[in-house]
Length: 69
Image (tube, rainbow, N blue to C red):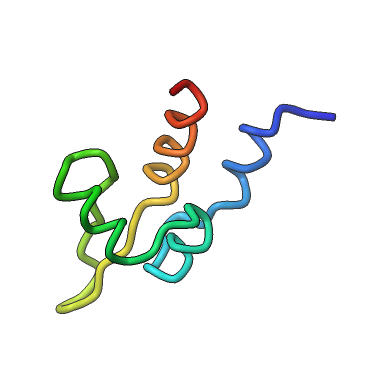
């Protein structure tokens, strides 16, 4: 078996919309936005006039950081 960090990083898309972020992190919208305001969760990038997405690499780094906590 390989390193799970490497294999999980490979499956995350480059950009993730909120439903994908909720599914991967097991956090709901309110918890995500609260953590962002507290500086403990990555902020999204604007991809359109009113649309945002999170970088998959940022979400993966956040997940990896949980493993050390």
